[in-house]
Each structure stands twice: as C-alpha cells, then as structure tokens.
Length: 348
Ligand SMILES: NC(=O)C1=CN([C@@H]2O[C@H](COP(=O)(O)OP(=O)(O)OC[C@H]3O[C@@H](n4cnc5c(N)ncnc54)[C@H](O)[C@@H]3O)[C@@H](O)[C@H]2O)C=CC1
Ligand SMILES: CC(=O)[C@](C)(O)C(=O)O
Ligand SMILES: [Mg+2]
Ligand SMILES: [Mg+2]
Image: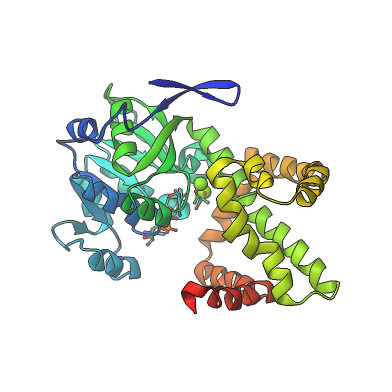
C-alpha cells in the first residue's frame, strides 16, 4: 500500500494505480454482488459497478418508487432486479444499502441468507457500531467489510461518469475467508472511489455523523442562516444578503478552495478581505468549538443513533421529513436562492 504524507502524518492508502480495475475484476470474477436498496447510494454504486464490468444484481421492494427507478435505470426484473430476499439469496456479496433504519427492519431476512463464505458490505459503520441498538450482529463465518464513499451517491455517479472519483474509507470488521481485505478493496475500486483510506467501523460512523451534522450540512446551514438574517435585519436586500452569504461562496470561492486550498482562495481575494478573514477566523472557530464538543459527545454516547432510529421508526417519518425540508426551501434565504439561480446566465 502506498505510504503518503497527509500534513505531518503518514498514512497507508490504496490508489487506483496500486489496485487497478483489472485486478479488482479478477478478485471478484466469481462473485455475484447484490446491491440491497436503491435509494441514493444504491444507484450510484450499482451502476458504477455494472459499468466497471462486475456481475451485479439489485434487490428492492417491489411496488416501491425506487423499484420503478431501478427499472428506468435498466435493471431487468427477474434477471438483474429482484425482491430484497431473493437478491440476498442469490448474492455472494451483499451490499447492505438500505437506509440505516431499513437495515434494522430487514436484518432477520438478510441474516438468513448470510451463509458461510459470503460477505456483508456496508457503506456506514452505523449498524455494527451501535449493534446494541440495531441488533445487527453478523454470523462469524462471513466477511464483514465497509466502503464508505465520502459524499452523496449522486456525486459518486456523476464523478464516475466524468471520469473522476469520490474518495472512500474502507474497513474490515470480520475476516472469515482470509480474503476480506482484497474483496473490500476490489469493491472500493469497483464502485468508483478516488483513493481509499483505512478506518474502522467505529471511527467511520463517529466522523461521518459529526461531519454531516457539522461543517458539511448542519453547521453550514446554521452559519449561512445567521449571516443572512443579520444582513436582512440591517436593511440589506435579499439579493445582497444571498449573494454575500451563499452564491459567492459556492460559485466563486469554494471552487478555489477545492482547487488549491484556503490560502489560495484568500490570495485571490483583496488584501482588505484577506486582512479581515485572517483576523476573524479564529474567533469563529472558538465560538463553535463547544458546539462541536457537544456534537461529538452525542455521537459517541450513541445518542445521535438513538435519535435517528426513533425518528425513522415513525410511520409518518418521510412525510415529516419532507415538511422540514420544505420549511428550509420556503425560507426567505432559499427562496432568494432559487431566484438567484434562475438568473445565472446559463439558466436564463
Ligand atoms: N445518501 C448517501 O449518499 C450516503 C449514504 N451512506 C450510507 O449508505 C446507506 C444507504 O443510504 P441511502 O442510500 O441514503 O439510503 P436511502 O434512505 O436512500 O434508502 C435506501 C433504500 O432503503 C429502502 N428501505 C428503507 N427502509 C426500508 C425497509 N424498512 N424495508 C425495505 N427497504 C427499505 C428504500 O426503499 C431505499 O431503496 C446508509 O448506511 C447510509 O448511511 C453513506 C454515504 C453517503
Ligand atoms: C453524503 C454523506 O456522506 C453523508 C452526508 O454522510 C450521508 O448522506 O449520510
Ligand atoms: Mg458521509
Ligand atoms: Mg452519513
């Protein structure tokens, strides 16, 4: 494995150069990969694997919206698309890509088909790490592996189609066959990962839950909302507040950060902006640090898992979720955003 320096620390990572697609195809040539679930990760991973030449079937509830989506995507009922249980029976590698709550609900069904030598694959450390809450304890004679793409399944597919890739972490929880690692890495390459970095199930879920509640999703909305509301309360127009809070970030400045780092983005702004940003960033860091401490604690104690499981178990969960998403969508900030997006030259 390649040893690469990240900051001041050296890590073992797996790259496509070291584990080429040809090798992945060789490792998995006799396997039937059953992708169980066709929500967000399911389509991304299943289609990438198929296009990379692997033997893939999809398992999904018949009569569901996502069954129809699978058909639209070219999966053929009775040939490459089956009910969950039938796919679990046929697969030698079961990619468990139901929602984390769905994984709990279907566990007894899936477990029945985890016969010796099969592999159970996750894209999240949730089910295994919080097994006291999920009841997910795999039989000892199967491999239990993880490849967790660090981003949406939608991006996993888009980047693959563009010839790029999304980085993923990988982990081995159980090696029953002696081949868990090569199976895991081959799947990681097969689903279209950029590079793969090692983790364990616990670290994956702790960092993932922190990241999505924090700077990736929760904190960023909180930060945007705080600044937008402040500007509006001081008499700035929605156009001004939205452009100065979100549009400039996503359209102009974040792409520069992605390309070459924060200092590079700063260097491409005025010296006035640089002076101010350098003066203020530590104050913001210190202000949110206690919230991050509280968040990590809530993840570590299993409280976040409990909240998620309890919420997801409710009959009307999807309806409630949509209501909350609509509340975001209908807020003045994101309504202003919709208007601003419409005015982008490419949309006009
Ligand atoms: N959404 C994403 O892009 C990412 C998801 N993950 C992980 O990947 C896994 C799958 O996540 P998503 O694709 O977001 O899932 P999702 O919420 O889109 O649901 C996936 C599928 O589960 C099925 N399902 C839900 N409850 C069920 C039940 N009780 N019985 C039968 N089927 C049921 C749905 O029909 C759907 O096809 C999770 O472990 C998640 O944490 C990891 C990285 C990113
Ligand atoms: C996209 C991703 O990796 C998340 C945010 O952790 C998730 O969807 O769970
Ligand atoms: Mg994630
Ligand atoms: Mg996540």
